[in-house]
Amino acid sequence: MQFNKVTHVLFDLDGLLIDSEDLYTETFTRVSAKYGKQFTWELKASLLGFQASECADKIIETLELPTTREEFMALKGVPIALATSSSQDSVQMKMQNHKEFLQLFDHLVMGSSDPAVTKGKPDPAIFLVCAARFPDKPKPEDCLVLEDAVNGMKAANAANMSVVVVPDPRIDSAQLTGATLVLRSLEEFKPEVFGLPAYDE
Image 1: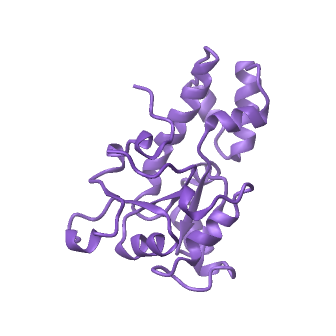
Image 2: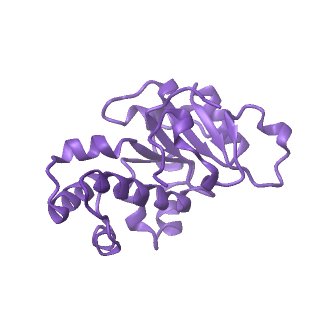
């Protein structure tokens, strides 16, 4: 099955974020392998706390890759951001042991403390604000939202974005008819069905 192609991915926080670290490790491993180099645990550990662009610089320097930061970031391929209804204080508290992980996102939008987000989900404001903060300002239809909640799904629908929902199993499936795709786990996500780079086996 093939869905609308997307270029940018927006993550909800609660229930989804921790699974995302594997996506970044996979991406850095894949990009490094294109140059015949190995993205090791030692290198990954040295990047903790870095912003995405700083990660690119460090990987290029350490592995002596014949590329620029801009080319590396383009190969990374999928700009991702966080769009959570939580406040900045709440995110900092919940993620205090995962600060390095938050640094991997291109940007963070925390709805409860962001003045640009005028209403909470199911209003589309948070996703529209989040998409508008990417430097290339993608159209809503070029964005994919990863969510676990019905209100998040509704907000993505209202924003005219594709949405993959990984719901709590107790949610009635009849409430999820607005989802582009429903998965039991993020591990089932196949980015290639949305035109994104596939994971390497």
